[in-house]
Amino acid sequence: MATKKKMLQAAAGNAGGAGLDVEEVFSTYLYEGNSSTQTITNGIDLDGEGGLVWSKRRSSGNQNILVDTERGAGNGLRSNATSASISESSVIGFNSDGYDLGSESAINYSGSTNVSWTFRKAPKFFTCVTWSGDGTGARTISHNLGATVGALFMKATNAEMQWFSYHNGLTNQQFLELNATTQAVSSANAWNNTTPTSTEFSVGSYGNISGRTYVAYLFAHNDGDGEFGADGDADIIKCGSYVSNETSPPEITLGFEPQWILIKKSTGADEWAIFDNMRGVPTDGNDAMLRPNLTNAEYDAANQIDFTSTGFKLTTAGLGVTNAPTGETYIYIAIRRGTKVPESATEVFAMDTLGGTLPNPPGFYSGWPVDLALITRRAEAEPWTVYDRLRGPSVELRTNDNSAEQSATNALFDQMNGYYEGGSVVSDIFSWMWKRAPGYFDVVGYTGNGTAGRTVSHNLTVAPEMIWVKSRSAGDNWYVYHKDLTSAAYALILNSTTAQINAPTLWNSTTPTDSVFTVGSDGGINGSTKPFIAYLFASLPGISKVGSYTGNGSSQTIDCGFTSGARFILVKRTDSTGDWYVWDTERGIVTGNDPYLELNTTDAEVTSTDWVDPDNSGFIVNGTTINASSASYIFYAIA
Image 1 (cartoon, helix red, strand yellow):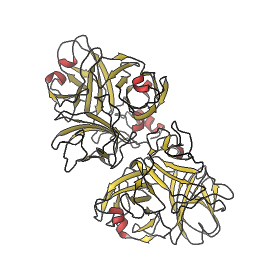
Image 2 (cartoon, helix red, strand yellow):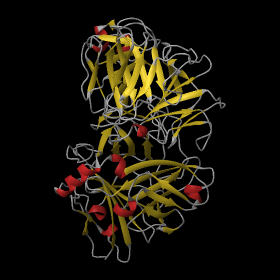
Image 3 (cartoon, rainbow, N blue to C red):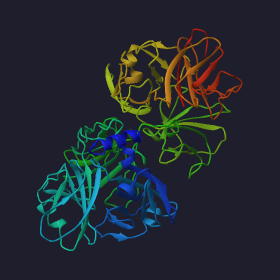
Image 4 (cartoon, helix red, strand yellow):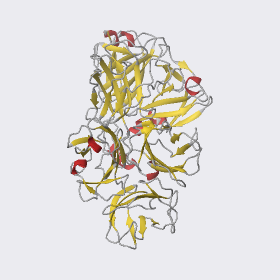
């Protein structure tokens, strides 16, 4: 949401963090330790607004360290221990766009990989408070969350004491211990048998011992009353519970796709577990898990959970941490994936040649975390490799053929400024990178059911204008929906030169909406039990354009509404055969010959044609191959 609109909402007296995006109040940030100091820039205003930084080493065992603005920089608590606050060089300063990290080896050892989760204070999302015990028994503590309290973690800061955890999936007479595996304990001494309100919570004698100082971290539960995102009406955090079932794993509906989840069994003893999409929660792949109650390194040897467009689902994998044995109750906190609508194409699209740009070369640099990557070589014949964050780092697809997903050299997406693609540095390997964002681009994984009319939820927030779908497990074609084909009964094939085909069993002759797209009974797009991946594209004014044109046999300008021309152009003829041509400004869109590649072939780059030219409004098409008189073409362009 634009800053001006947020200011107007604030002036009108809107409550509850109206218009704030998830990106402004929560961050998962990955970094490499240096045993010195470093500044973490994650876009969270801790200096002005306040909040909590929770850090953990991933690559080997060490402490979970929590530092908040109420107690001040340099004062760390351990979620895995009962110890009092420790003065240390962990988080040593709070900034308007992140924080300063000290030399504390637990979370900044040279060469180690680490994660920090930052929670900014914001109504209806998160807050933290401190108080001093007076020994009078039960008392109430005021807070400014301004919403239903979904979860609460309380800890004495100047004395040894366990972490007391309230959750709306428990009764107000129960608590869990964040530092332990124990099941929920019943005692009035924690919350005084009193449910928290939107302005205060109660503590029993455990939270009011004379001479002790305390801190509490409060997480909201949005239930249709969230005031976030572009329209100021989105929920971004939910707290709830589910019952395990090893035979038929539960699927939890949140109303949004999560990016971060904390889970704990409440009816039995077991670990706490944190999953996030930056470290990796690949659909049908092994998930990166950290445990707040332990110092253990990251565990990534099991598929325990999948994030979906509307929530998350558990799996039949063991460990018991998320879904075993059958009949147990688990509580969770879930935070929504990004809600920020991009204001510039450079925020969500980038191109780079394989090289040593990233901290761990070779790699591709984008300036932000990558969600989809296409890779090929320019000078030699090479398949087009497709990687995405949702499917995970070790599998690939190819746009130039219909082959099933196959194992691949790891394309590691746990980078903040691009992604790492293993292998030797070759100067002509090139990548195009997309970031998911409302109104622009989305990625959806789903399992087919073979039933015509099946709807697949998405989070694009607008109706997709182009969709690519591919079966992950079978040799099926890449099927393409485009808004400017004859109707929703028609499709294109990405791995073929074929003209549009009349295939009502693909999209069920149904136009997508701003929340779902529909698939028919065709096994290539909805085969029973088959896993599929879908990429959804839309026109976002000034940033991207999905459109069409009719050729005139000479030259014409394609107006995309841009101001500095198109950096990326994809063109395909639809009324007859034709390749899927790709041009971009990194390889050259000039007045003169422009190199092109074809998504549907392994051919090397062709540099001897002048079929496109630059234009500030979009691009110019020339000649007869992509501008034949009276021929029909579709295109996708990015500014």
